[in-house]
Image 1: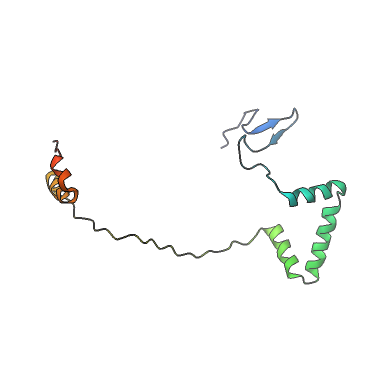
Image 2: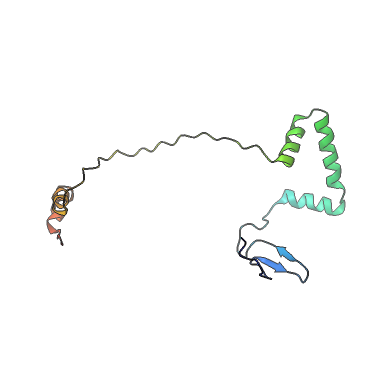
Length: 128
C-alpha cells in the first residue's frame, strides 16, 4: 500500500493549484544535466512541433525498406533494449590463511595466541 494514501501533499511533488507536478527531490542527481543533443532537439521541436512525427515516418520507411539499424531502433524504442549478458571472472590474489581448530577453552586460545602475538601475549588477562 502507498504511504501517501489520503495525503493531499505527497512528498517530492508540487501542487500548482490544479494538479500535482512530479519532480526529483531537492538535492537529487536525477535532474536534467547538461545534455546538448537533447537541448538541440528540443529547440527544433519547439519551432516545428511536427518534426518528431516526420522523423518517425522516415524511421518506419527505412525499416520497411530493410534498414536493419532502423529495425533495431524501432524495436528498442517500442519493446526496450534486449538484456545483454555479461560474463566475468574475478580472481582474488590473497594468500590462503589456515584457520586453526576451535579451542576447547579460553585458556587454550590464549596459549595459542601467545605464539602469534610474541612478547605482548604475556600481558593478556583472562577474566572469568
